[in-house]
Image 1 (cartoon, rainbow, N blue to C red):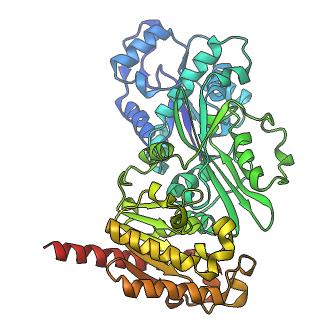
Image 2: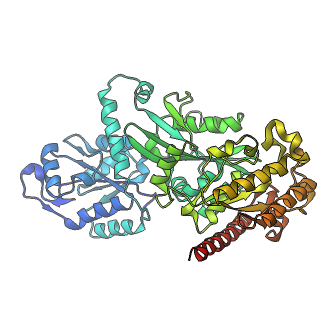
Image 3: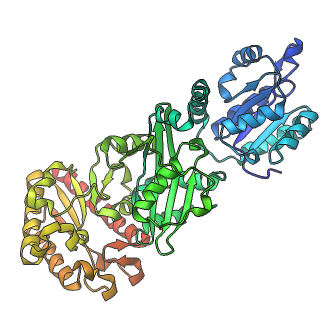
Length: 514
């Protein structure tokens, strides 16, 4: 019977949540099974509010006495008409009427609310099957977390906005200390479950109208040749909003495939902040269809925080991925491919991984800047990223006449001095010609030459350097977009080989210690 997903239930009190009419002085008797429904919905992500014609202080005291007051957000308890009160609750919570269920025992109240808000869903609690319908609705909920704190944050902000009086919305926002962060490309893999939930639950601010399966999203995020992607996190002086947006650009079509946001950041300028990230890469992308749906003022009240700042990244991981170790044992150094390998690894909680600009580059061995980076005991290095001229700045012309070999030797010395172990992943030497990035001098000839340098290094330093030849893993040409970008299937194979290597090295180390 539900015509749209329910995100909010607005409850009447008298003869709905309890028996009796509080304003008439009746002794009230809490309907315990409905109180448990409220708690159950909260636990699964469907919040509850109140719209009741009662005295606020008296009703609040009764709810506190039953341990229920803190189960509700944006309660409206006074003697004003219910349609206007419910409309105000929905607007304050930045929801759509279609995602709201109003529960009351009075047929006239229900009819008035439906007349003013035709999309709202209603339930006459006097129906014989009303409790069964609510229990069935609860059983449909798959949310794994309460959203009470999210909406309490909005409550506090709403109170302060009202207290600010005639101050413009932009000036009010400038005083909120809003910060945002936009992880890019495969950095988003760790947040995939929340991204899928956001896309599939959002309607009001799902500008692209998209829906997605998690497997498809993961595949697209890993396809960094085909798609650009950003997740959006936001926080301010009131609290942390978590992951509130996701944007994906189809590179070939030059259009937005996903452009979706949480209603909790409505009117904060987050959409325009996200478009700023897109325009850095796609300045001419067309968003004219949405011109009337959100502001086009550059949100100078939002401070852009880099995901590559260790403090920012650490805080987001603490919120979203508490299992990831603060002191990782493994680092994957494969630039934009690193996140895909980490995603498929059994050791993900022990891994940190590179993604531009937080990368290791072999040229760092020329100036000693590698010493400023963190290197855990086990390293996985995608050698192919440094076969490109562009990675070497103004030294590119020295690569093939000794610079590369010098940097490999220095890397081996560094590994030995630090007692580190490194698995070097080598690109294929016999891929089709169009898979090589010839414009960057990543040719089959250079690939054979540099691969040979690493094989020699592994032979001469067997305790510190191992090599993994991708040629042994690639079964079909379509597993790679090019010699530096791989599709999900190959990334999964690399992760499997890496895991075997980690186990071998770890077990070997344990045996030696014994």
